[in-house]
Amino acid sequence: MNVLLFGATGMVGQGVLRECLQDPGVQWVQIVGRTPSGLQHPKLRELLHQDLWNFASVEARLSGFDACFFCLGVSAAKVSAAEYERVTYGITLAAAETLARLNPNMTFIYVSGAGTDSSEQGRTMWARVKGKTENAVLGLPFKGAYMFRPGIIEPAHGAKSKTRLYRVFYGLSKPLLPLLRWLLPNYVLTTEEVGRAMQKVARTGAPKNILESKDIRALLRR
Image (cartoon, rainbow, N blue to C red; front, side, top):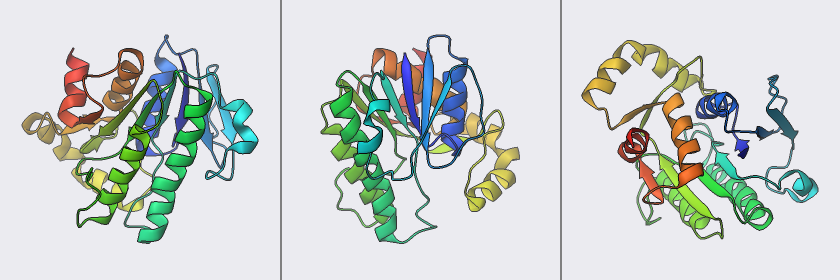
C-alpha cells in the first residue's frame, strides 16, 4: 500500500506517520507540506508545496496512491472564522478533488472531530465548517471516503501538538489520561490507535463512513 499523508507534523499526523513507517504492508509514504520535516526513513518521501489551495503544478507526484490520510488542520482558537474555513474546507477540498481525479481507487480518510455538525446549521462555527468539509469529501468519487471523529486523543511515542494551548493541556492532564481511558474507554484514543485504525480502514473498509471514537475502537477490536 502506498500512502499519502497531509499534516505529518501535527500531533495526530506524527502518530499516523509512525504507524505507516512501522507497518510492513506500507511500501512507502509520501508526506505533503510547506516546510521540510527533517525526517528520514527508507520508506519516506516528501513533497514540499507552498500553495496548498492549488496542486496543479505537482499533480505528477500525487498519483499512484492507495490511501490518503488527511490530518492537516488549524485550531479554531488561533484564527478568524473566515481563515478557519479557508484552511479547513479550502485546503481539504483542493487536495481531495485533485486526488479523486488522479486516484479513483483511493481510500480517503479525513480527521474531523467529535461534535462535528453534519447538518452545517448548528451554532458552533468550527463544527459547521467540519461538517461542510465532511459532506463535500463524502460526495467525491473515491473508492471509499471515511470521516474519523476522535474525541480525546492521547499523544503516544513522543507525538506533540503544534498548538501551545494543547501542549499545556496535555502536559497538565497527562497523569489523568490513564484514568480517563479506564473510565471512558470509548472516548479516549491514542495517536497510535488512530494510525492503526486508519491503515485498517484503508485496507478493508468500515461498516459506515462516519466513525466516532467508539467506532474506531471497535474496528481495532475486530
